[in-house]
Length: 514
Image (cartoon, rainbow, N blue to C red; front, side, top):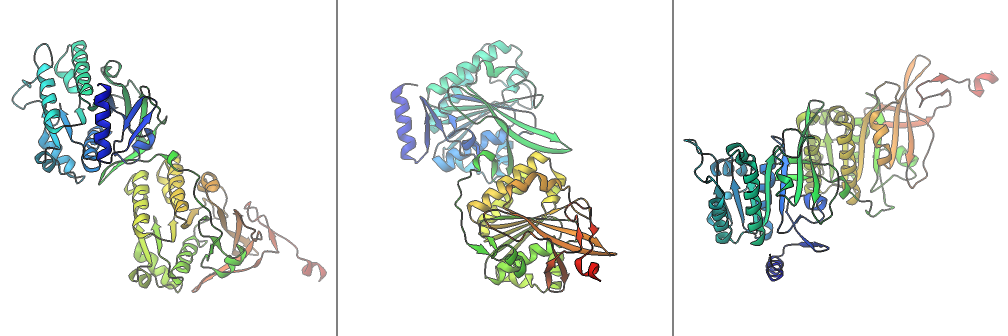
């Protein structure tokens, strides 16, 4: 592509409002796939060929379809889809599930199919005995007719299966991609892999054709699938390294780069109530508006109660609150809240409380994160409670769980939303929580709820283990629970070893004097 042609292409995209990134002498075209352009440092290198390789079910066809769709919807750029496997009818039907009206775009001359899929009555007549000149002519015609700047070929493995002369196929594919790049098109083609961590492709086409390589993986870990994307190489351009999680949802493919969560959010000294007056006093006036509080305790210590009082404190201040519940149904939560004197049903009717209930195993961790972030954006709450993190941690891998917490806390902090997460300890006397160990550094405050065995009775202890940026009460205080909620009392004087779980009674001064 000549310099004059490149300048003209940039001018056309600028007129349509497309963002064009330059790295040295390499221009990048935004794909429009959420999250991917951040990982790619602005998008795919313009007027170059990118290989997208992955095993079955890794979302290769969705990736290239989303690439064309975003070009049409966001940048007013037409696209050509060359299909070697699925028929255009099947592709239209499958992609309609994401709300992509391909038939309308075809009528508007924004999307064109070049159908090279196998015929049901026999082998395709498209490819000649010696070259793919006929195919190239068809693609070039579609590009000129639509003035396309994006071309996808899905999937090249079908060619290698049908025609055994691999060297010839590679040579012809190189001729096709070279011709398309000279026409000013950015080319993305897919290929099948046999293993997620094996050879890049089954036939080694990337060594001869591709300028860039993107790998999609659909990994089975602990009986659950997890999708990741990795940019293996961008020729002459920078990009992020390593695997990044992604998911496929109702609007297409979403990449979730943890590196996008940056420590640049503003901080505030404004305090809000925890919903428990004595706890506010222990926190030197309440918790910070942009802080994340982790409440850790064994089953029955009052974690859900504390999250309910936290939300009710916001409701009483006419704030909008959001609860993500992973262990109890809405009716069960509302019944329990009513038993503590809190009318959550009324708060919901007034629009001050939104509750989302979902079993952790109902969807992948990345889907949970995207849905939660979307709901936070829609509801625009000032408080968010998650009950409980342990339910998620038990179902998913530690890596995906930690990435989830990083992304969620970053979202809340960026919008200065007060967050309260609960975590269940494995033993009744506390300690040893996996969740505590791996997210304690990500939270601003940690509140420990513990059982205390003393003189034949089970009592309860509360302690503020840490609170960033503020002095706080460090004593281990006893608390009780009744029909009005949690009530924090005096510090423990007659027992020690509460936090370690090795509780033993002490002889107080008054008893010795007697």
